[in-house]
Length: 144
Image (tube, rainbow, N blue to C red; front, side):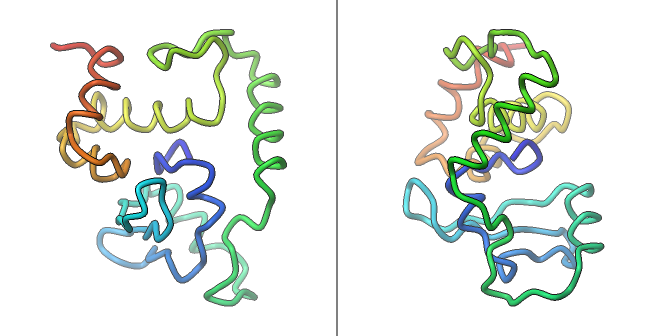
């Protein structure tokens, strides 16, 4: 989620056929999203390496993450506790980091370190328009 900016529900809907980790650039297809519009997201090199080395005994329609929402959220909460993260998630309006914090971290990384244009980040996140992205991420990344 941190490398793709996907929502938990979007990750859980990913099927192996949605991953093109051999393409240039490597991408993943989000077929089922909050906005009900499919979108393509560029895949980070670490994910490409992970999926390239994944065991091949799977069907194209198998889920990439065959877990229940509850299980994923529990694993994320356990990871946050294990990492002893602060009780605050900057810019999210939430007191404690959670699954959605990974999405915010991906966007912030793309905008600040990756130099990805705002309209591209907006498309990768699946926002209905760039104004939503601007409203959410301007307080996080600043206006410099």
